[in-house]
Length: 218
Image (cartoon, rainbow, N blue to C red; front, side):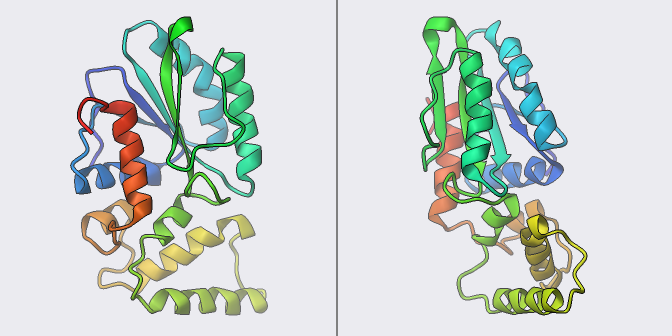
């Protein structure tokens, strides 16, 4: 499903094309009202650099909201410090660490838009979107462990070509290559029920989206 561009000015910033398709698939699965436009910033550095301008853009209309979905990568603490620095400079009060259920910030006295932050995979651990997806693999699936063993064998022999930071990507795409329709994209894997969305993590994520963008229609 291709994300829709909405007439309103609510915006959800993501760092890549996989997020751009995974989030609408989750919205469809949970009947989340897509009252926001998803913006692919084509990289975490570009996303981070764009935040001040995005805040300025959304300060002008009333009742506008800004969402940020960003990979924690190797260090959730360091990623949070980056965001904290950017947002404090714009006038927001930032907690010392992200909320496990997703962070939502308000600064109505300054007329700033409400901002929501979700750090992949779960606001607690280092990692990325693919680590979030890994947690959606059905619990009775035995091939994921075999995919783990396969990567470990490659690594022990020095045959892997992916960098360590991308191991989660290699793992989930190896697992997807072994499904009924090999190579299914991440978003389609959700839509086609290859991945399970009956998880607390998914519920927390869609609850965060609704609280941020659809507070009157949770």
